Length: 222
Length: 294
Image 1 (tube, rainbow over the protein chains, first blue to last red):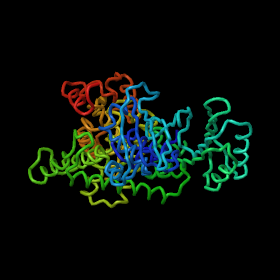
Image 2 (image 1 turned 60 degrees about the vertical axis):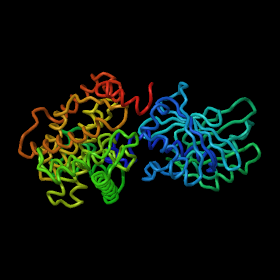
Image 3 (image 1 turned 180 degrees about the horizontal axis):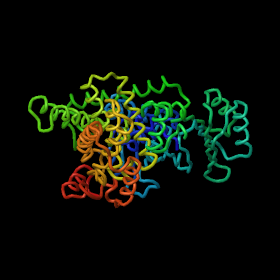
């Protein structure tokens, strides 16, 4: 691998360790996006090593900072608990001793201002990288390294073709794409990771495709 | 021979062939692999230096407390001591050591640092390099160049061995950082590319086999103090090299030995917090106090 000088001296980061701070902040941020950027209340259920060590590593502060849309290297990351209280954001941390799929796993349960509930489960997999593995109880998988479109839709013939032809219209190259569903004909997720930035216009057009499309979220490349 | 060198020997060959120093060769390589222009790259390194300096200043001035409450305030304590008393190892060395501890304390308190090469070893390079540069009245430009020398050494260790404590133990983290700082200082003060790599080799040799045994798994104890000793290691290695003392085992072979030693370390001594100091009665008590019984 061609290491850059900035892989060796860098990144500029908030301590104490990238998997507990940068990774956690990113997970918080992605959860915020999936809630449609509307967080009135959040519960973090921590598993594995996260559950056992989150206080000493500041993982709680980093997660909440991400929920509040801070960047992973924001100097205020360590003050997020205080800032959340000042902003009236209600939060709670629960340690769960269930076996997680990865040692550093967290489930965020977000309640929006209109009472809408969004659940996301993700892992901090090292060096600040993350993996999202579940949204609203449905298994998914993406890393946030690419601009990612998360589309909740009904499992109907033609929905995927409609979305991908839109991508063609906007000259967006799909790097990875996966479809996940609960059961036949029911709730499903399309996860599209692209090589190109995705504009608000694209999102609006996806939404306008019809009733089968229930929600569209964009997660910018982390 | 490609611009994209992969060994110390190849790097020295390129330096000699093109009559350039290590930092210049590393900058040429970075332009080549990143396809970005030189000024852009230098500016980004300047930003890294600014964050390093800020972390040193903050850690020396403030009463810092880590998130866990285990550590903090020792950098300032050391500063107050060397400013007032006659010290055993001398003011200059103590200042460098305090600076390194300052950065690690800022890291443990969720402050901003620059991984160099990792967060757990991020104090050594700024601690040793910045304080030495100040004493020799070097400009920021010279320090930025020295950071490229350091990056060249760190790159070779990352590529040919490891800088992860979980893989190679503490020798891989604070050893790599000390090697990077030793080479950077040596070249900044006029040493040849050969002398810079000799300094790096000696720094790794000095702590070969050092285990990674963080108490309660936190990047605090013994990490902060190992950044202190790593800083002294870097500065002494630089002086040895600048005096013309050579490393009997060449840099590339030392790096390879470090990797092999790291692989033979048992899992308990590679960042799992289950051996060494972490598993002493006091180490375990601290773990229980912070995280509860497991």
